[in-house]
Amino acid sequence: MRRRVEEKIFKFLMIISLIFVFGSLLLILATVFLKGLSSLSLNILLKTPKGGYYLGREGGILNAILGSLVLGISSTFLSFLLSLPIAFYLNNFLKRGSNFALFVRFSLDVLWGIPSIVYGAFGFTIMVLIGLKTSLLAGIITVSFLILPIMARSMDEVLKMIPSELKEASYALGANKIETSIKVVMRQAFPGILTAVIVSFGRGIGDAASVLFTAGFTDNLPTSLFKPVATLPLAIFFQISTPFPEVQKRGYASAFILTLIVLLISIISRILSKRFSRYRVR
Amino acid sequence: MNWRRLKDLLASRITFFMTCFPIVLLFLIGFILYLKGKPLLEIKSIKDILFSSSWHPSNMEFGLGSFILGTLWVVTIAVIIAVPLSVLTAVYISEFAPKKLKEFSKPLIDLLAGISPVVYGLWGIIVVVPIIRDYMIPFFNDKFPFFPFRSENFTGFSVLAGGIVLAVMIFPIIISIVEEVMSSVPFEMREASLALGATKWETVKYVVIRKAFPGIIAGVILGLSRAFGETMAVLMVSGCALNHIPESIFDPAYPLPALIANTYGEMMSVPLYDSAILFSAFILLIVTAIFNVIGWSILLRLERKG
Image (tube, rainbow over all chains, first blue to last red; front, side):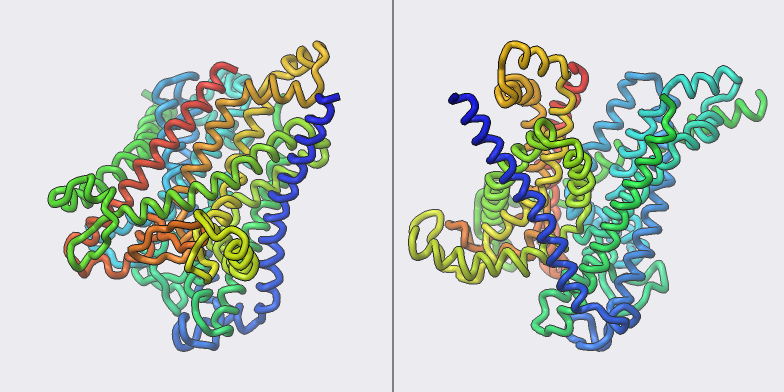
């Protein structure tokens, strides 16, 4: 009898916890969408802030939307150029159980855990060393460092799942490692690699602490690599703390757009990973 | 040597150098931050920096004590809230939940992990802070006016607000690691326990949780490390009062990462100021790196054994 009661109590506690966890997620989404939808208008989406992002009561967040997209896409691309070869090298060029691969994976995991503010401080220090001002370029480099471990490690996990028989078949036909990597493995792993890319994009676009020092903020649209650029997370951060409701609205709208992007990314990656498992060779 | 073989050789060399990059980056970050923080270490002892709470950059006093304590308060609250909730949730999802719920929960957890920290902060300002200000502070001031609930701060921007927001942010990390570790416990072990007459819960308690225990610890450590370094969300809700050591969950706190984010504008104006800030970043780096090394080593050992 006592055994049953204990089981009941714990099951009850677990369900309560589950409700708390998913409830808080739903609460966050509901808050952002309700606040965001009521502040959203074409004006906000298609104009840059007039009279300063902190004080000006008119205009919108186009500077931050475009800035975030440019910064996110460029840093994702830069990070991709490094991540893909790393994942290929770890899985196709090295022997299984190699200590070097273990060490690299471990470094990537540790890098993944380093707070983004540390990347921000690091990027800022490098900028000062080479004489670069807060700019789009500095932001791109810092964010690409930030998402490198996420992307490389996710691609690595995808490539690990490619059956070795597939590679062996390709080697048996006389293909060498790079040919096998690009023509066989890449094709097989494509949906998984794409998932890794867009998930990293989502992380990069949502992070504020790393771009605070490096990309800065501006009212203008991104036009040059060497000028500061506005981003959505910082648009939320700066505009929410003003006393003016009109300016706060821009912050809510930015949060809505940013969360919408994250939501889309999570849906797309879901579809892609289903596709990945469907085409998997068993 | 023909062209194809040359291409293969070239590719393997180039990708090898690229693969070295993460290791180089890790050491470079540590080295540069240390180098920048060193001028401060030359005039102050480590003990002075870490334990003194007097932060007056214009008087050349750089005691990080109050910020470190601020971080500890917020992280402790976050862990107290997040660990039981997320471990219980993970146990439920992995062992008891119907298949539908199990499939449904993973994308939701991933979504929770992907939401921008600033959006969490926004949620904290709109929802958590008002609840604390309007309901919790009056209630606790009335019923429990003693440590750790007594406070002179009635704004709601507090240790508790930071702790709650952080707790929600580390749910997904702990849940996904614990769930994965529990799912990797071999099915035969459960069957053996059930066959001996144990109930489902007893099996979970004595077999699955015991077997997955190191993994649960690793999940908690990695969650802790994330909470330790989280900046923007905490900065937005925990009040940030300078030279103030929190003595209650309703007091404002000024965590270390928030200090770095807040003072960047003035960093260059006072000598040694930037050195102090970058030394704080170095502390964050070392602490999170240690947590991560411990956490991932545990998970790696589990994976090898299993």
